[in-house]
Image 1 (cartoon, one colour):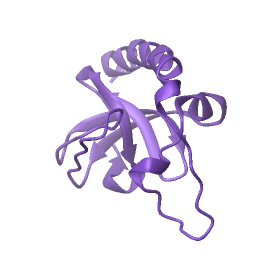
Image 2: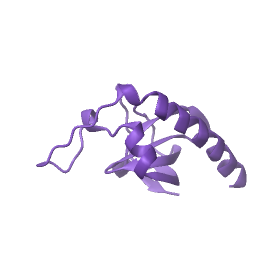
Image 3: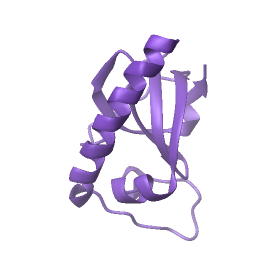
Length: 112
């Protein structure tokens, strides 16, 4: 677990820089009537850095995929690290491939 945490810290630093660089690609739109977020409502990287820093080691319980740039796809039982959270979304990366990073829904993962 110590080696995994070390990889997570290194990847977290890289992702924080990447998130700040990509903030111009994101938009945040709130809908007052709906609690569920659509892909178009994903929080911006700036919002995440300011108010949602976390470090959770997670396992995917239900596969999910996305064609949207900046969103993560993962298969059941994949291991992920969340570094930011906002509402019903995490921003993170695959534990063993930190180049695969993006936003993913909280409801599809569980803590290890």
